[in-house]
Every structure is written in structure tokens, then in C-alpha cells.
Image 1 (cartoon, rainbow over the protein chains, first blue to last red):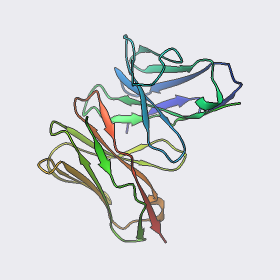
Image 2 (image 1 turned 135 degrees about the horizontal axis):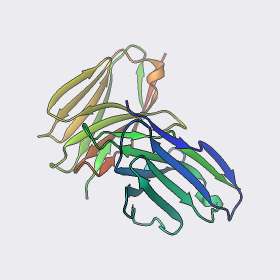
Image 3 (image 1 turned 90 degrees about the vertical axis):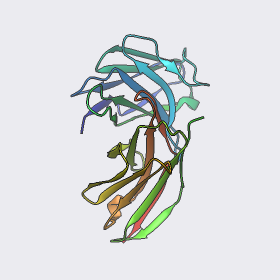
Image 4 (image 1 turned 90 degrees about the horizontal axis):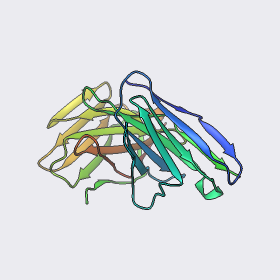
Length: 116
Length: 110
């Protein structure tokens, strides 16, 4: 299957700092990528849909000024958690939809954020 | 409201048995259907995709789709302890939107 690389896999930061997470589709182009958050033993929660060259579409209740998304190329989307607080600690997962073929959705490995 | 529903489980089956996972969806316009496996602490991994009515087999996995009943299932034959995970059903309506169920937790007992 197609490969989506997400980096970093783990990050620990101090409260008030910003953290950037990268999501790359390694062997396919992805006009559309998605960002999810998942708390322990809970289901995936869609945060936003990222479209190359345009503004991201945020789900209700997700602060766009806090979770900055940039999708500057067909293979890279970034999520920046600004002024992080302990309640932002979570497992953040990106996914990328293949532009060609059956448009399947592939997930990155996830990034575990811990805010102290 | 587009909904995808799964029984949260937990579903327990003995090793070697068939595990049957079910999913229903609300929108008749749905076009693409996917099953993902998620191990604890890891991200989801695509197992199967199915687009037309009927069965699709891949190794020990069989996906079944019935659009008239708005129902998609996943059968795992000869279940192994390594199959123990949460299985997520996903439905795509437009290709740019994917809706996930809450997942079914499967435990395969050795």
C-alpha cells in the first residue's frame, strides 16, 4: 500500500510553546489530507481537512488559530499546535487520500504530543 | 447527518474461529467502503476496500457489501491472537469526505 510518513512520532514540549507536525505522502500525490486527534480508548476525531493550495476546512469546535494547517504541496501537509497547553496532549494522526486510483485513504504513523 | 455505526464490542473469539465485524451506514449515496485495523497506540492501517455489492476476499479477510441494506461486514477466518485490535469501518460519500465508525474491539483468545 501507499506510504504516509508523519514526523515527529513523539514530542514533549513545555506549555506555551508551538509544535509542528509534518505529514508526507511518499509515493503518491495527495490533494487532500486529513488531520485527526485521538484520546486514549476513544475514536478518531476529525479536526480538519487540508487541501493543497487552499485554506483548510476545520470541524466545528476546532480552533483554526490554535491548530494551523498548511498544505503547500501535493505531498506535504503540516499541523502546528500553537501555544500548546496540557489539554492539547493527544495522539495526532494525519491521513492522505490518493489522487489517483480508488482514492483510498492512508494514515501516517501518528504523533504523540505531551505538553508539560 | 451521515452516520457510520459499529458495535463497540468487545468481541471475543477463540483462536482459529471466524470473527464477524459489522457496520451500517446512513447515506444511500455512499460509494466507497473501507476496513481499517488499529492496534493500541498505533495509527489505523487499511485492510480492505470494497466498492460494489458482494464479497471481496484477500487472504483470511473477506469484506461483504450490501448497498440495499446499507451494510458492510468484515470476516476474519482462522483468527489469530495477532488479529486482536480495534477495527474501524469507514465510508466515503464524495471521495473527499470519509466517515468513520467508532470501531469494534476484537480479542482473539489463544
